Image 1 (tube, rainbow over the protein chains, first blue to last red):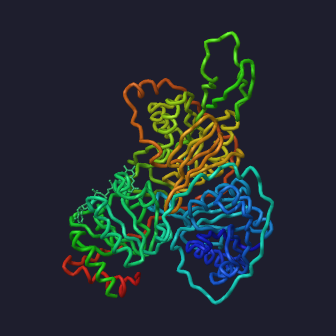
Image 2 (image 1 turned 90 degrees about the vertical axis):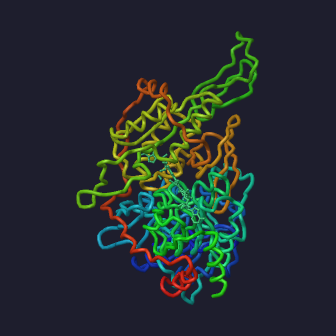
Image 3 (image 1 turned 135 degrees about the vertical axis):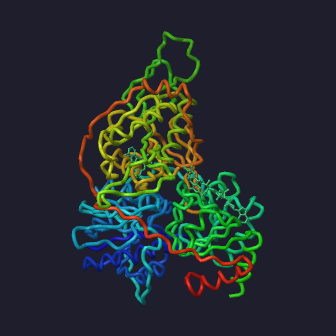
Length: 320
Length: 283
Ligand SMILES: Cc1cc2nc3c(=O)[nH]c(=O)nc-3n(C[C@H](O)[C@H](O)[C@H](O)COP(=O)(O)OP(=O)(O)OC[C@H]3O[C@@H](n4cnc5c(N)ncnc54)[C@H](O)[C@@H]3O)c2cc1C
Ligand SMILES: Nc1ncnc2c1ncn2[C@@H]1O[C@H](COP(=O)(O)O)[C@@H](O)[C@H]1O
């Protein structure tokens, strides 16, 4: 009956978003009077996997077949379905990501499970199984009843404030039968920034728009991000112009993020941009135009020139 | 579309289709490899509120308020459609547009026809649940053996990003999303997919289900001729084949407005950092 959490690895470590998913899953398990089990796929040390206990999991199922080393939504869905069956799971929890989304959709087809994406609160179990999820790209919420026997909750970042405890999870090897049909997609190459804070996972984000005038000026954005240990993001025209990689573009047609702090520099605040960032906890806007629409959606604002303000903020952070 | 080199007289079955192709000895002018010029592409599109829409609800927050709202093709679906048309122009074949929706989605479907799709299917139902939508799409795909099923990475109303994966699973086909680049060589697709902080190049055999996003193609705008011909292109309306839903929206809510913005004079920019630490407690 246990709640099953699909937890992802990044270079052998549990992802931050997955830690939050485990914490969320453990809370749901408490509501249901059962325990939380994490399923982790890929290579990792037992000592790392046992840290799932800090977030509330009592057990980790570890699927480490080398065929699973490449992220593969289809094969991972087969593994998670097998784990769900072994554990008699009715509720599966995961944090949204490119891999988890692909995996979860296949799982819906396999298990006829009801999936709610972008869940922002713990479920309400007082009358059936109701979740609150973000819809219309952050512009509204829908209270949604999950009516299928198996339920999948894909949570949005920053849904709960994670509290760690001093506990370790037991780790069990999990080796379900794999399905050859799941390996039809060949990965030719991967091109990924390493060492930086991953944008979808980041608690703090410094983002910049066309107000920066050109890619050669991004140094002042990166300096502030570095001082804060923040990730960098950008508006759509900036990635369309190839000033920054597409994977940094946030908004209606880009990533939807919900960090603790979003600092927008030289971004006007078009509604399509806001759609991707409006669920950030605190928004700071720096723009030289006092009429920029973004100020209406901000918590803190500075009317000023980014070329003057950003270096001063960086110094102030470094002085902390 | 499937390109196969084969000997005269040889017969083969194209993957995912039931047509038999036979090389005809009587037509010696054929020098090219035999081309089954029927790359069949299905593009699944949503009809969604324009991205600038202010969302409101009626009936005690249980219904989306359509009054005054302009509906558009889902922006990601528009990318899928644009790439489908390009592939058709390059390789030959047909593009069918499919929407699960009520009659008020037809302007969006007609626009897709005006952009260059050949025909359209509307499954007459209110698409409130991703699994329900996926079952309709899968049922149509089973009857028609498409080589490619293109969708958007996500719909901008419910943002589930799941219909392509469910359809892939129901059809036993690989699904890949979000796809930023797509090229077809024979029966193989070369794909670039976005991942956190970067991208991945992939290769897979057709048939496939793909969730698309930019920069897979430039959005296309219908021209006058397209708009005229769209009126006479076939739009078939069919009833849903199954009724099962796994989720059900009970009510809606708008986010609480943000409090007033606190302005900091530019010459005191440093105080922002103090406020973020002591007041907002985020750094
Ligand atoms: C269907 C659709 C989807 C879209 N999706 C997205 C999306 O996902 N994400 C997105 O971002 N946009 C999206 N857009 C585009 C969006 O409408 C805006 O055009 C875009 O967000 C504007 O980007 P920007 O703020 O960087 O540029 P601009 O609007 O040009 O704003 C630049 C800002 O910088 C300020 N500025 C200039 N110089 C300085 C300086 N020295 N110091 C301080 N401030 C300065 C200016 O006052 C101005 O406010 C979409 C549009 C459509 C139609
Ligand atoms: N009602 C629908 N009719 C046709 N296609 C749809 C419908 N809903 C979703 N899709 C397709 O599935 C993709 C992903 O949708 P979603 O899973 O809702 O985010 C969309 O971009 C469309 O291509």
